[in-house]
Image (tube, rainbow, N blue to C red):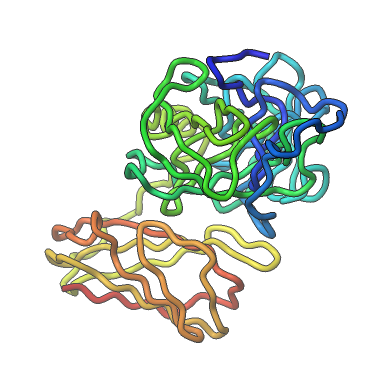
Length: 346
C-alpha cells in the first residue's frame, strides 16, 4: 500500500457511492472486526442505474471503479494497473453480474489517470469529460463500489454515490493536479480508486487518494483533457464528410437529434444545434409520442412536460455566429420513435 501523508492511494476496491472510499492501492481483502464504530465511513445512496459505470478487475478479482468514456475506452486510475490480466464489466450497477464484460488489450496513463483500451466496442451513454475544473465550493458527486466502512468490510456489491464539496486544488498519487474535496453525505475509501467525480453532468475527476474519513483527492480530468482526447480519438472511426456541402441556412437555428444508445429503461440522445444567423440564445423543443422524463443532461437545461422536452442553452454555448454549432445531450427514461424537433433563436 502506497501512503501519502494522512492519505491512502485508493486502489483496489471500487467506489462506494455512499460513504465508501478510495482503495488505498489495495485489493479487497478478508473482513476484519471493526474496533471503532465512530469512524465508519457510511453515507450516500445506492445507485439504481449507471450505464456508463465500469468495474475494473485484475487477474479475475475486482480492484477498482471506472467509467466508459468512448466506445472502446474505460477511464480509471493509473495506480489500478498492476501488470495482471485486466478486464471490465460495463453498464451494470452490480459489481459481479450484468452488463458487458470485455478484456483490456492495452493501457495508457497520465499522472494518476489511465485509459484502458478494450477488445471490443461497447455502446453506452458516454459521459462528457470536463475541460475546466468545477467551481470552488461546488457540490460534486462521486461513484464507486468501494468499502462502506473504515475497516472490516469488503467492496460494495452495488454501485454507490455520495456528495462531496470541492474546496481547493491539490495533487494526486502521481503528482498531477487533483481536486481536493471534503465529505458532505459520504467519502471515498478502499476500492473507489478510478471512480468518477461528477459536476454538472460531466466527469471532472478520477479517484486517487483519500484519508478514509472526510478527505479525498481526485485526479483532474481538465488538467489532462488534451491527452485523453489524443488517446480516445484514435479509437474510433471518423464520420465521413457529407457528399455535398449543406445548403446555406436562413432560419435562426436548426437542431438534429441522434439516438446515441438505448437500454432497458433508458436511452441517451445527442442534439446538435446550428445557427442559421448570429444568435445570442437558443431553445430546442423535442416532441415524442410517449411521456418523457430526464435523468441527466449536459450542456443544456432540459425540462420535461408530458411528451415534450424543452432544452435551453447554458451560459457558455448560447451565442453562436452564423453557421456555428454546439451540442447537448441527456439521458431519458424511454423512447418510441424519433421526436419532432424544432429550434428557435434570439
